[in-house]
Image (cartoon, rainbow, N blue to C red; front, side, top):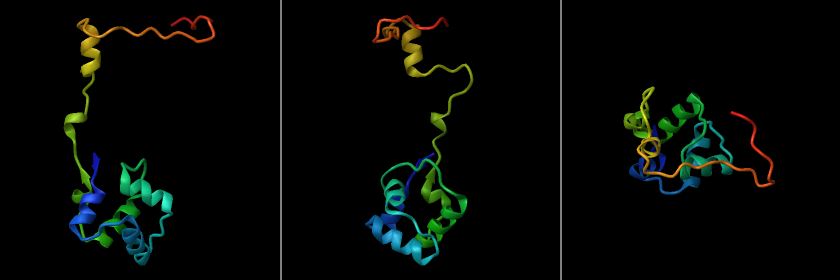
Amino acid sequence: MRWNLRLTAANKGVWKASELQRSLAEHGLVISAGKMSGLWSGQPVSLKLEDLDVICVALGCEISDLLIPEPEKVRRPGEETGQQAAVAAGLAPVVVPRRRDGRSLPPM
């Protein structure tokens, strides 16, 4: 999923995180400046469903405006990533981990 808060807020005329923070507080959701910064500038690590409801009410939007599915990023079991395929084809160097203190790694 891709977090789309800033674009959704901009489409509703909210251009600053502090504006949204005040609007959320008016709807009963008090968010710290640090958490608001994380919601505004990046992908949230966790978000309560109740908080998501308040964000939707404050912005007058739907959940589908805030969360954009990205099914192409889902890997199926046994499916190789691009890096794994490159290593398997011999196109990428194999990295062997080594300790900096000279001791050997535990057996695998």
